Length: 119
Image (cartoon, rainbow, N blue to C red; front, top):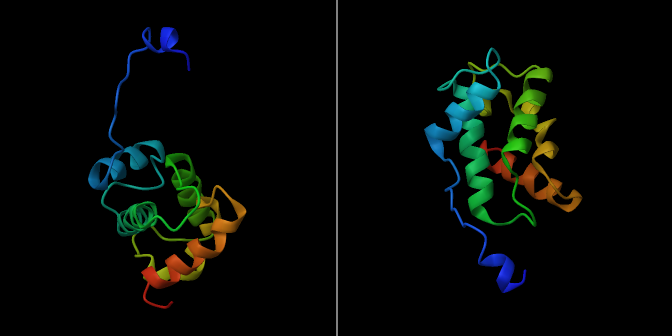
C-alpha cells in the first residue's frame, strides 16, 4: 500500500481469543448445541489451539472452520458430554473441515489421532 494511504489508516491489533474466551465465543455462536465447559467443546478448542500453535499446516484454521467442524461433529453423532477420545470416529469424520487447503487434511487427521492417543 502507498505511504499516503497508510498514513490515513488506523492500525488496531486484536489478540486471537484463547481457552475459555474462545470456548465462550463458540458456545454463544452454537447456542443450544454446545455449552461452555462441555467436555467435547473443551477438547475441540484444545485440539484446535494445538493445531494452530504447532505450525505444521500450510494455513491455520480460523474460527469459521472451528464452528463448521463442531457443527459437523454434532451431525456425525458426537455427544457434547463426552471427550474427543471417547468418540474419536465421529470427530475424525469431520476433521477435514478444519483444513483450508487440501494438503492439510492428512496432517490434521494425524494430529487428531495423536491427540487422542491412538496415533
